Image (tube, rainbow, N blue to C red):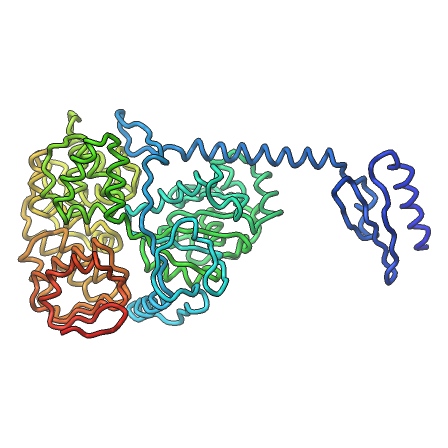
Length: 603
């Protein structure tokens, strides 16, 4: 019987397909099983006798070449569409705005890969503060002994133990350039300058866009929404080579707080439909397409700790510090292009050390450049805080607008309703205008003071950076600038400050937000209220918190005003010589300093 079946197949191949290039090359009998090796040009296929497909004609070399050509054209089309969409950036939404070339404007920031020890220590402190348990991090973190600088093209390189990360977490405060980096990665990959040996396909998913979708969709449908590829084409790619696919997921910390993502079922089929939040959660947890790679962005380390228990190992934790001083200079040069304008602008900022440090935040650096380009002779010496730069920028942007007050009011109303702000795309401006709307009286253009902040508003302020802007808007100098430009004034400032200080006092007791509380006081720039807020503090412990230059500014301000703070603990804070130089005037006021990784105690 076995012989008869074999003869029938042989007859079919030899006589029916004899004129083709296909031929029988070998016939084997092993343990009652037969296997045939067919040759079609350079392509070989091996099939079992029981497989009905073994009777089908094998693809000819022309068909295979045709398939390769189709795939090549498809990839070229996809990459061309990415280049077209990522080549330019729109910085704000006014008729005078012109797209800016990403390649000519982009300046690479300093990115730090966190050490395994520092990350674990911070997680332990976070867990202790949050009164949770069970967080285990050691087995999931890549091995590196100390914080070290890392570049974009090294994100998926192996560590000292030859482990390659399946997931890279890129964290950083708002305005540090996370989304900008993802756009640059997309552009460079499509241009053949980055990751081409690592990944055949790169996709970008933005939670800010996906959270607005209510319709159930499959992963392939989600990816094809803003893509030249069809859902079927993407499905084929994900089936054939999932290990050669990289997903860039922007805004995971916002996704984590979404109510529909808390408890979701496993979702493993890219073609199966589900709510976008369910698909995204399963994707970054590694349940969906576990062989693929992921680069996710997050605004805060607290969200990173939560994600660390969700994501597949091994992990690489990185954080954007911002521009170095040389990076600030490079950005100014790229922004102004004209050498004379560049030198004049950069020298005016360089003389203000505080402003120069603030410009290490890429978004703030851009705003300062914008203001100087509008008026190269304007005084920048009063700009110290983040809020002061936002106010200066917005008033400069709208100085030619005929109805400045109504424009700002409309922006505040849009932001308060959680809608996209008209003039600026960046999410931080939505928070700025939301904070403005908290105190804005629609009748007489002044700050709300008749009603105290509601419990809901206080909770909302504490859960975001709105509180930072709320304190900054109460800064006397900032208020004065608003008064001159938009004819607004602050009423009953004392009571409003007391309400905000109560929030800061409550926050200062928590390890996770202690540094944020110092930033709020720095934005307020009120010496008397800062002393009151920190009167009970005897020590400050920021150990295992990766301190940036702007953090050092806030810490220095508070330490100089509060001699009652005698003990300062800055263990494993990655304090460089430049950061210590910022802190130096305040360090002498502390009786005991416990610092750096050496654990030395300095009296």
